[in-house]
Length: 110
Image (cartoon, rainbow, N blue to C red; front, side):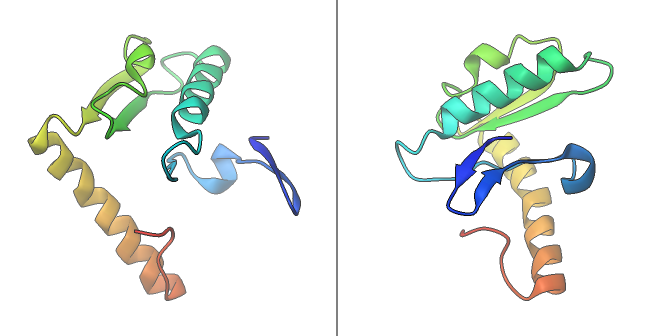
């Protein structure tokens, strides 16, 4: 369980919901804290040969800097490397297009 809302608890199942996650929100919403907690928890619960992380951080790497040295982390993209940003955006655009095609709307506000 990640938290609670008006409708009750909110949880994510990696098998049911898929192995990828995007955390988005406004300044001060707690994105960095949630991401650090999520990555640390998953790293403790899974061996590096069972789960790996590619971390995308548009705060210059400051939000996930402590997670970069985990043996699970195989890559990190920050807004400081424009080439990697362009490579990271390509699959995100594919996901958005796929969700639009199947549902008629964007999966998250862009």
